[in-house]
Length: 203
Image (cartoon, rainbow, N blue to C red; front, side, top):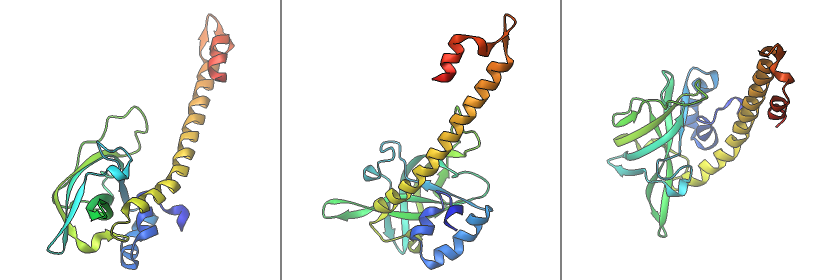
């Protein structure tokens, strides 16, 4: 089961209630739905401790305001929700950061235009904005105030997958470069016979 859970679904898998897991995980595991992992912010990067997005409880609902950026799987036709970190109060003079499930299509939740990226075009990546986006109080994911710690735990697991993706991309680039250097001819010889090209590939 764990091997089939994506980064976007992992917070629900790790910290969701039984009801949240029963409702959300089946579609995520079969690939009929996707989820976004809403941590990074314009001014905070991946520093969850610098989160500016806020969520306040009002009449049994979380009212969310703020912005996220570089959020993967947040704007596809099958994106079901995004888990977002938000400041939900203070504890002993420090920010209380919690995680909240925000379903796609929630009024006030806007998925902005996709980034024009150099690579990874198959990866759906968007900035997100929240303007008085309201979700039920029950959409709190995990213990209130544990959002920072929980997301750090998810990042520790996710970095392994990102390392694998990066290694695979680098291997693919090397293979493509070698193939091109062998097939491309310059002055009647393969480009791969040029020492400067050999040094470049070796590096």
